Amino acid sequence: PYARWLVGTMAEEALPPFVQTDDGELMAAVRSRDASVTPLLRSDPVSALRLSLTDPPYATKTTSVKVAAFEVVAKALTIIQDTEIEAAVRTLTLDECDILMKYLYRGLGLEGREKLYPILLKWHPIVVRRSGPASIVRTVSEVQRGL
Image 1 (tube, one colour):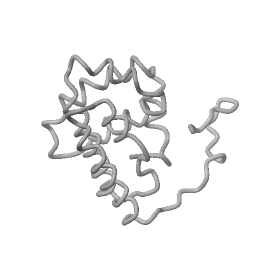
Image 2 (cartoon, rainbow, N blue to C red):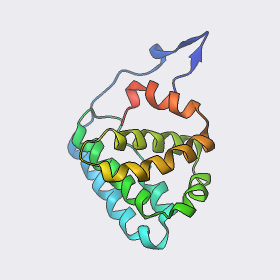
Image 3 (tube, rainbow, N blue to C red):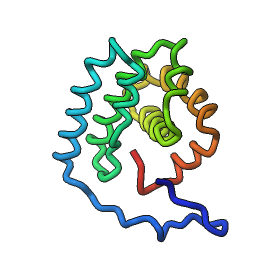
């Protein structure tokens, strides 16, 4: 799913052109995911996290859709206890770690969400340990798959 490095250059030409999806459909998907995640927060927060990471809104450049998707992920991040973060991250695939990393950076870039920064910063080094520093590179270099 990642742009591959070929002969020292990123194969941008191998990526399909960006196509904007209907924001109404994307928001409906985010709301549906939120409705599925919310009941899991108390009973199975790790499953809530994994579910919140499914189907990120790559097919839009609309900030409100991306922020709404982040809010679903943030619910799971805030409910998982500090002592459980490492175990939760171990359950994630490398693709899910990359998606989570994108959401961490999205959250750190949001104004007015400063209270979330300490939580996001607790997750960051644990995700890097699990997925490696290349996850950061993939996160910031995949401009066509930004959150």
